[in-house]
Amino acid sequence: MMPHVAAIVNPRSGGGRTGRAWRVISETLEKELGPVRAYFTASPSTPHFLPAAELTRKALKDGAQLVIAVGGDGTISEVVNGFFENGAQINPDAHLAILNAGTGGDFRRTFDLPDEAADCVKHIASGKTRRIDIGRLTFVAEDGQDTDRYFDNIASFGLSGETVRAVNSATWQKSLGGNFTFFWATLVTAFRHKTRPVRIVTDTGFDETLNIGLAAIANGRYFGSGIKMAPEAEPDDGLFDIVMMRDLTFMDLLTGTGSMKEGTHIGNEKVSATRATWVTATPLGPDPVLLDVDGEGPGRLPARFEILPGAITLRC
Ligand SMILES: Nc1ncnc2c1ncn2[C@@H]1O[C@H](COP(=O)(O)OP(=O)(O)OP(=O)(O)O)[C@@H](O)[C@H]1O
Image 1 (cartoon, rainbow, N blue to C red):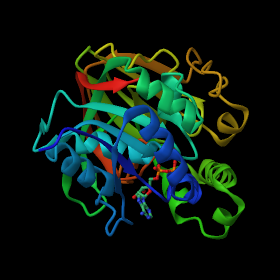
Image 2: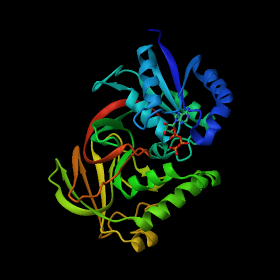
Image 3: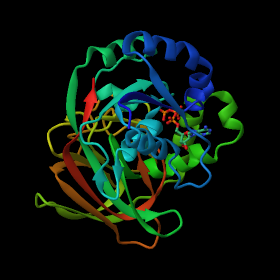
Image 4: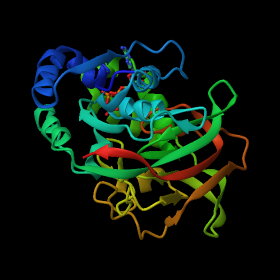
């Protein structure tokens, strides 16, 4: 076990820009932090394999005191998963840092972390830390097995879960760029979307069955490339902000139930919001209700979400 700084690098993030820029990024990192051991992710072989999580576990067992996630929101989420094994943290004293190199960059927005790699490195080197909450959810995986995973930012279901699937199955659209693909997927999904009855129960006394269009269990504030879904979420208050949009029509989605970009949808009559430390969501109809967890689509409801207060120390 050698104490060291580890970088978990997804070379495919940001449409492959991270791999191409890695040499320059690593030089900047080493100038500020000293030697950095890089671990490169491999292409996932199954939908459940989280390549960056496995590497993070290895780095922590090898003695990493600081693990830098170099990639997009998907990579950050996988690295967070890698801090845990069999329900416990591998090294509770190790720190997490983010070197944003993806296309969306939603998690960093809650912390006002910079977009540029060189600025990120300065933040990491400053040594400032904040203990943040982490979410854990149990759900039904794509193959029908009950499974669990951790999330740092937002887990949601309904429209967002369908949009993630549409982005992943896009073909020619991807050649027109990430933003176009996301815009196309959102539009197509919104057109096809049907609300689904879901019973939502929390430890704070909320117990309602709603015709869910989109519901978010939020630790951070943003998802979907800058949508301010949970404008008042605090990632260190020990609580989820739960935002539920019900009875949405295609027109609601087109005109906006308030501006979700600005976060003013809270307060709309079709939007409910509450806070809790745990939430269960059970679909009451025959159709699957799909999950989006930190921008990935790992499975569907029923699901249980619980918060782990102050679970990870973030350099930010
Ligand atoms: N070497 C690799 N080759 C192909 N895919 C990879 C590789 N390593 C990781 N992945 C996949 O990359 C995805 C995560 O990408 P990530 O979120 O980091 O970047 P992004 O999509 O560009 O950014 P964002 O999510 O912020 O928009 C995961 O689905 C993961 O399985």
